[in-house]
Length: 236
Image (cartoon, rainbow, N blue to C red):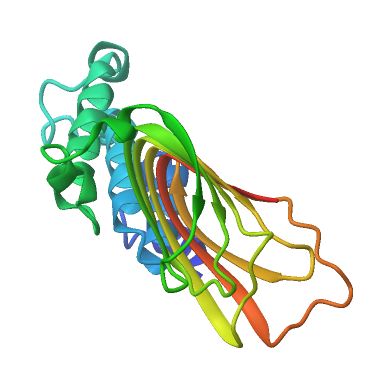
């Protein structure tokens, strides 16, 4: 609808015909990605695509309206592409400081030595909940409580492998929230579990390799909610 309206407005002279080479150009793909990200409330992702689209659209706008953007010419992208690296770095810093969970900011001064190397453990005595904060290291855990009631995994430059094959789910939905910045999570779950994956990832993603048995109890579900920047989660 929007594309059709723009074509019509340009053809009828309501908009400057020079806008055709701006609006209908390949950098507008980034703008579309930004709109999709906003629709799903992925604000960090929307900011990234908006910055990328603006960067490549500026020379095209300057070609149509040179008086509006003096100093920007056809060599703008080739000369100023390092600005994208600077913006990416700023985005990572802002995510660290103002992200939904700032575990890494508080743990930077309180982390013990186990956070800086891989360790393996059996998890018991947690009242059914699993919580793991990792910075510059990793953990390989086997959850041995009889019932798994969800939890949180927060990672900064590290990884977690969690084995849930020796526990069960309560009735209803059980939520496992995963936040990853430069790292990854591997989940091993039983075949008779129903697993629902919800992901918001930039330069990463979630890979669901879980093979669900035909006799799975659909009254019990594990909902994995992942937010990842340069990282992700694998479910198997």
